[in-house]
Image 1 (cartoon, helix red, strand yellow):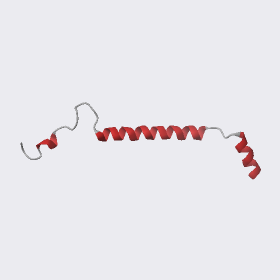
Image 2 (cartoon, rainbow, N blue to C red):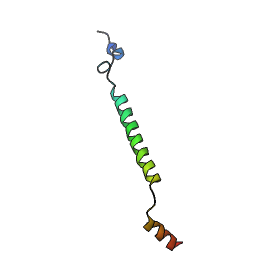
Image 3 (cartoon, one colour):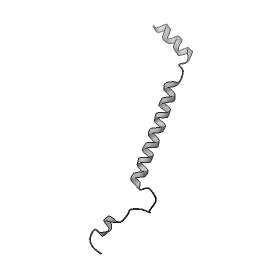
Image 4 (cartoon, rainbow, N blue to C red):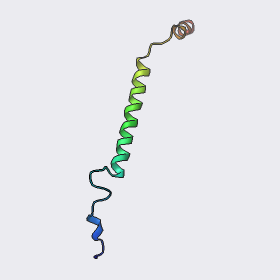
Length: 58
């Protein structure tokens, strides 16, 4: 056995994503979920009660 000979060996099982890929996928999933929640919030109608309060303040 030579020193450092395992450096070129593949990490983990072949065909399965590594830890870095799993973390990246989770980040992408979380980003997509946050964008979805934000989009739905922005598109949501303002309740009439809130509009009435805003008109009274203005």
